[in-house]
Amino acid sequence: YQQLVTDVMLSLVILLFSSETLIEVVTLWIVLELVSVLLILMERGYENYPVAIKYLVFCATPGDISILSIWVLTSQRHGFIESLLIPLTELSQTSMSVGLLESVILVIGFLTKLGQFPLHSWLPTAYYHAPSPGTAVMSGLLSKMGAFSLFVVISMFSLDPAVFYIMMAQGIVTSLYGYLMTTVQTNVKKVIVYSSLGHMGVVTMLFALYGLVRQPIIQTLIVVYVVYHGIAKALGFINISIMEQLANTHELYKLG
Image (cartoon, rainbow, N blue to C red; front, side, top):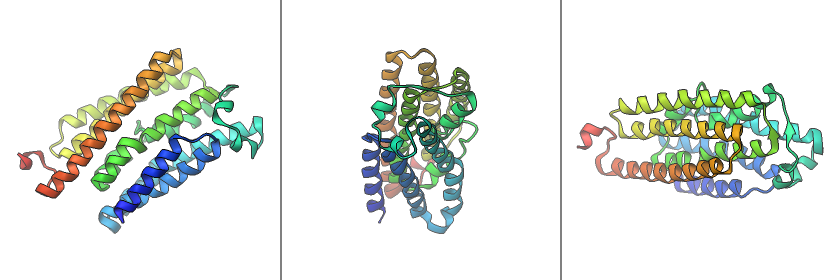
């Protein structure tokens, strides 16, 4: 069953990243969140219910609010149903100006998906307690849903510049916290989990910089960094899965 859930999740991720309309993004985003909860519950069942609830409250809910806010704001210009069917490339041609509050609502859910402070606590918990093959998908691909959606938001809306300074502060705090926590872990899975938190802080800082200066080189750097992190972390968690089978432990000093 875990293999089936993982394959479904991978298929949905491919469809999300190749979405051409807003209705595809909204629908696939919500379905992926539900499948993620199912994957978290597959490791220890009932014991992981608190983890699944934490994921729903601190990650899925803010993400859903942001993704639905895109629909609400675009519908003011294009109509309630029409905004869902217009190609994303066409929506991004006429950038819509929004205030600070709307800007924060638009990005907060996607920053949470990247595990950014102050709603970062779900990431170490969910990544650690989910099955390692599932964590490989969550860290390697699902976290990139936040980066994908931030690109969509920045292309479709003229956000208040203040929101990018907030993002920069979030990225700095999250990165420092993630890397410092990485250095004190004795559990190899937690090492990679907190390392992911640090890397996502760097990605957030790059997004903040891109939002302020809009240089294509920064956009390219974000894409390269995100792809690098996805491959590295997916391989890392897959290797941890092999360690579990061979040694039945995550502790560094027991692994030798």
